[in-house]
Image (cartoon, rainbow, N blue to C red; front, side, top):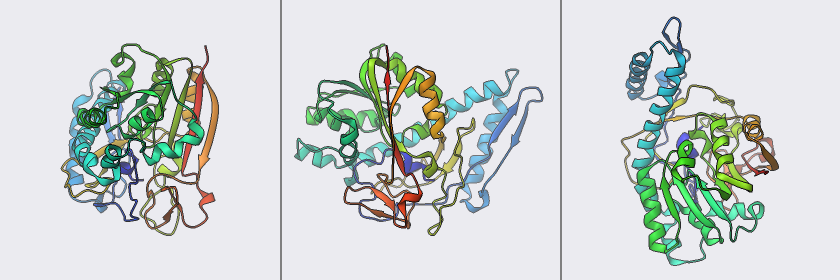
Length: 357
């Protein structure tokens, strides 16, 4: 499971078929559990720690120091809140460092957006058959990163707003929108704070692209935000990497090996990697990320619990990046799928749901 690849693999990441630069073995750090009565911090599981580079030892020690300092009479509940805040800080730092490199990378095709007023991202092109006509719709794109998919939806005729928690990502998105005179609004906010950040506005469409949910600790909180952002009759459109794909160990070039979480867990999976999912010569200093998986049933149930009506669920045998290096081949649509019997694995899925009045 390559967390950086979960990030927003827009516009031909790995289009040249190479393995991602700087690919290193990521490992789960100590999973931290607090028990309010005894105020005990336990390392529940350390997977492959000694296989990682030595800096992971410092990461482990820092997490233990932070977690132990966090414990008080509120016990595990307080630890959970602090840990979520800390994870957001860590992930924001990672995205802030990568945003300028992504904007400069040919994989995000910034120059093609400038040169061709009809150009849209490969992700947006894939979505069109299920997304349908969005002309005249008021849409919000959650976790929009540098905004190329958001601007693509605007070029399809929607009035779009993008939301992202990374200030440098939002700055790149605004810069591109201004240069294109696209008229897309970009707002800096954590996805869980989106309702307040957008002033209580409601939308006809909530769009979430590939590589977004893995950065969120709670899919039920996300579903609540989606429901509050939608006007009655409004629609959620979500295309995401399949949780089964996220659970696979990418180190194996000749087998599909389940290694990582499938279901949502309170503790993040902690990974350390120097690279990113697009072509760049930048050497990154911020390399640690915290991620979570969410089972498909958990995602559907979370939406049903907030009153959404499921209107579509399609599983795909392709994904927009080379998720399993050495086992995949690229399609004519610039997607990637298993070379050997791709029907064995759901690679991604598209979920649609409507908010009924």
